[in-house]
Image 1 (spheres, one colour):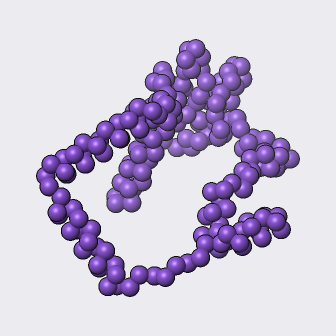
Image 2: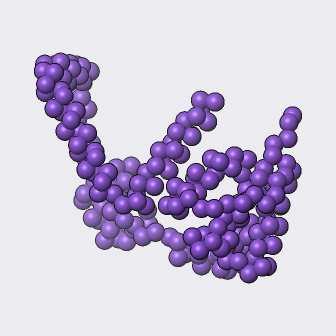
Length: 202
């Protein structure tokens, strides 16, 4: 089996200061991910490469730059909760717990799985529980399908073009209203979905 080569690299902040140490087998793709997450193209430098014990090699470089006084953004192997005492980790867990939002309540209602809500919240949940409606018969489903086909089939070419043009206009307007950070997040999510599909079909 051929040994892989893993690259250890550092990233520079906008102020041209080292603020991240990472490792990757595919450095170009990794830089693209950093650009999408940060919102700008960071300058990077490959400082080492390895084929065995790459996590330990990365850890040593993180410790090296920490000892030099750099404040790194690393979450794993150098800075972050993994290297904190157990008591501090437990505090972070408590602080990191998200409050029960309306989205969570609606999802729990639909699934019939309620988290630890208050007694009053449980009463409200029970009153607003989603009532399962009557399921459509096979004939009704087939009828709706045919109606949908008939609707689009009966449209004129001009109507279809107008509909396509309006849809394109609406999409462009929605995209223009998004911030740079939102666009980067959408692009990264699309890339991640494509990557996962590729892994599943590989």
